[in-house]
Image (tube, rainbow, N blue to C red; front, top):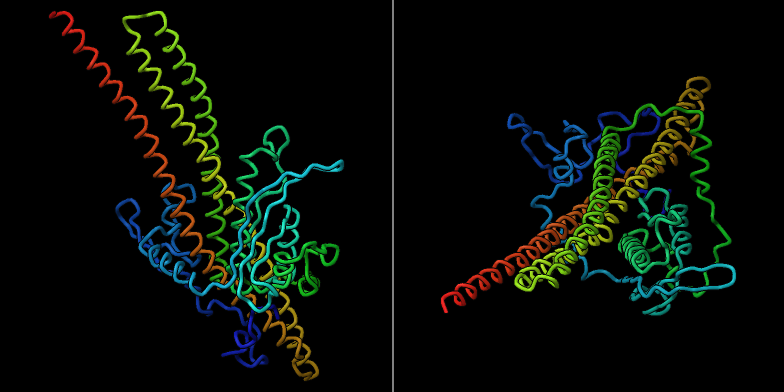
Length: 443
């Protein structure tokens, strides 16, 4: 049984093991991840959209379905209230900041300061401050995945970057990675089970991590599941978990499409910015040789310069704030799919052992072995932990995308307001110039 999954979850309300041959039928109670959202499609039919439950879905290629599936509805405010209310009961606070570059004869790397404040008795001191590099965070995630196979482990930012395309020591890259590492660690520290993992304790407190032991990607439990289930085909994944898989596929498709389009927009904005700067320079040069038009031409050049700055800020925001969130959730989808596959292996192990035990009982009346009940408990723990993490993930997702889309709207409004104000100031300048010219002619 996994850490953090009480046996009572698995045993309560279960039928005797001898009465069960096909325990995972469609009769299982479906997952209810949150309030449904009703939308109108084409003005004719209402479709209920839920987070991972069977539904009539919109076309995966529909541009509007992403926002429907993100559930940016009234329950966002309730999520926000719950989020702030939980701050009062939190007893573990972590922060990742202060990146530093280290250069040696063998390698060059970045370390980050990891600060911890806590009142938990598992910690000897109330505050800690250590320095960690990316591979240390990677070690922590592997250990969490190894020791908590039934739980969703938050993703890390991707380790490798294309040389010549991204400078991994640039200020922008380091800042973006630092924010992602900080978010990863905060998600782990806020988790009701992962936050009590001894490997997290070591990561937050130890001056030097001993990473030589236990780097296997699979636990002994996971290996036994793989061995037993290797020759057994899963009968059927329960409907609620099938709906989760379908939701993840659609969600990943939408994120991938938005990511590709956003990258094209950034590229086009960069090209446009280059042209716009050259465009403004022409007006500045012209103003130097045209005395009568100097002030209006300088005004145009100033407007173009203001628009260039606003566009550059908008593009940087998309690169540094918008795209990283999309990519984090693409990685989150892969992590969730990995937990679903492990859950399926657990179910396959249970079904295989149960079927073999029932056949033996029919042949020689051998009692159902205790290991079958243990497999059932383990499967139920997988189900309970996965459902709880799914609920938590959906809540975090709603909060993250509400903040992301609100920020995107604010940045675009700010961009257009700056451009509008710049050009309006030019109109005022031209009108004043026209008034001056009429006054001169009158005199």
